[in-house]
Amino acid sequence: MARCCSCAYSWLCSFVFIAVAVVVVVVVVVVVVVVVVVVVVAAAAVAVVVVVVVVVVLVVAEVVLVVVVLVVVI
Image 1 (spheres, rainbow, N blue to C red):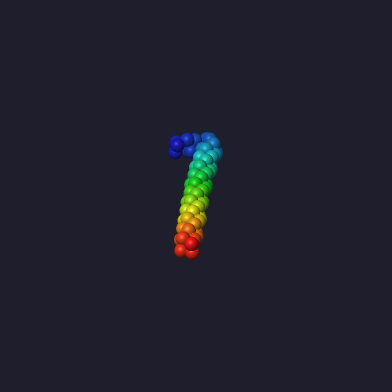
Image 2 (cartoon, rainbow, N blue to C red; image 1 turned 90 degrees about the vertical axis):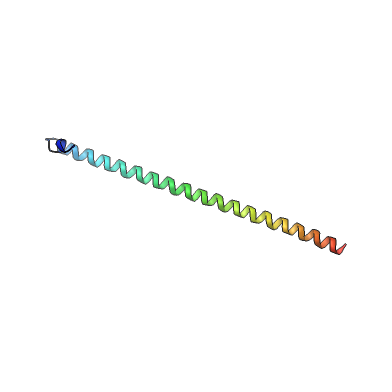
């Protein structure tokens, strides 16, 4: 590569270096965005599961409380 850049077509080598650098930057940005999206989606999924579990536990507790009250009253 050093020999190419010392040749008469050094502008071509500069273009190739710039193109490779741009491709690398674009790939890194895409990978980072994909990782961030996956992490956010996973966090959202975990939050949804936690909310569902809390709601189910509260509903079950309310039903048990109603049954206990009915048994005590009756």
